[in-house]
Length: 264
Image 1 (cartoon, rainbow, N blue to C red):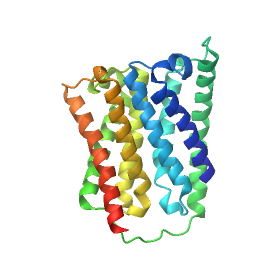
Image 2: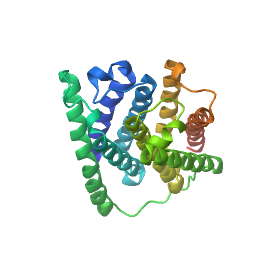
Image 3: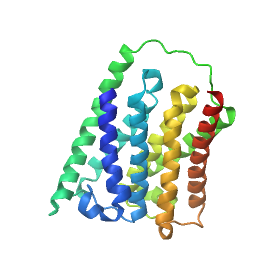
């Protein structure tokens, strides 16, 4: 499991670099062409935050302190595989660009492998793990309230974007295609699962890495907005909900780090 998390972390680091750094060159270096550019930046921010989550999980000495990463990663990778299979025609499988062609096939190979490997390792790890150790440091009530609200909003919004893209794309604060709608939906569902899992665990030592990744995600998505403000619909309700959601993730990360330092 430790090496699987490290491998997955390295792979999402590559995807983050392709999308968050080389945002405007997905037609040349990524598995499919993504426009508007803010979509690629959003996805890249998610991959960078996921890299941090998986790397930190791989460094924990106890399973009870690392398992927070696994359900969310498994959920996201499974949904992304489904979205990929539904939109194979959008991928660069026949691109004249060697890099784009390789990226498309590499993408398919990763998402065809990682969810199954994660599920097998998850089952084996659960069987081998000892009984959970008790912890005396619970999460503050206000923090749990934020996590519950984040989970509900992201799961509802994510499921809507993933299940019915043609109808739900209009609920997002910038233009989407059916593929990018499902890609973003997969991220929202995965993060929603992470927030719900964090709420349920309710022990700071068990969820600290998740809260750190929330902070990273919030910062990266703000940077994406600063880079491409013209693509964002600032006047619609969806835009305000999105901003509130990103702001709450920043607050969650900052609050948890402050709380953790104060209690330790």
